[in-house]
Length: 242
Image 1 (cartoon, rainbow, N blue to C red):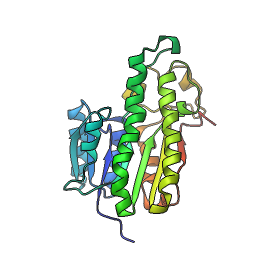
Image 2 (cartoon, one colour):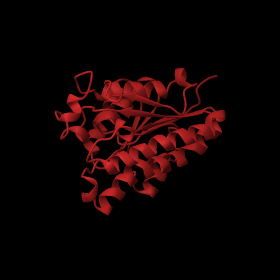
Image 3 (cartoon, rainbow, N blue to C red):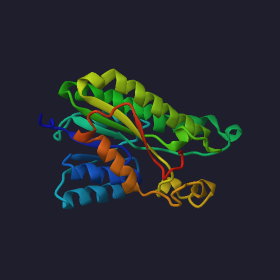
């Protein structure tokens, strides 16, 4: 069966894992929607790399914490319906539990978990009509492994994992797969301030991972070869959670 015509959307793809995932999916022939909230320059650099390699890319601005922005990002366009969705945009606002303010808690939940739900809800009708879809949610090993000072982040990522499993079961008969990738310590702007600390020392591989290594897992889960893989979380953490 030929792959349906459509595009891929990677939220938060102006840098880090999102940028690497956008490049990897474009290499597999998907037209890309490169999303950013504030880093327009980074998003345009990613799009330029995709186009230089012979691919197609559209830069789309939108804060995934804004429900109306999520709706706009997922609307079918000239590139077709969104048939591959990577919910990658993420936020950390760390602090010990007694120090986390309501606003810090809610903002992290909104960006990491609620946006994943809303984007998935918008994408699924398009995928179900096409009887093809790939949703990959970027979780974290912190969703299953305690890391002091990240209660809000851990709660959001644990929620992503539970959400992934449930939605996967709901749509498995319609050719749509829903999986998660749980990165450990990856060299991105999000982890700069914690690199070199106790968490890094605990990694059996004795090194930090690269965005490309996480993106390779996303690329697999979005591929035809992964059509029988759904409802699972693929951990990429150098053995940290083993």
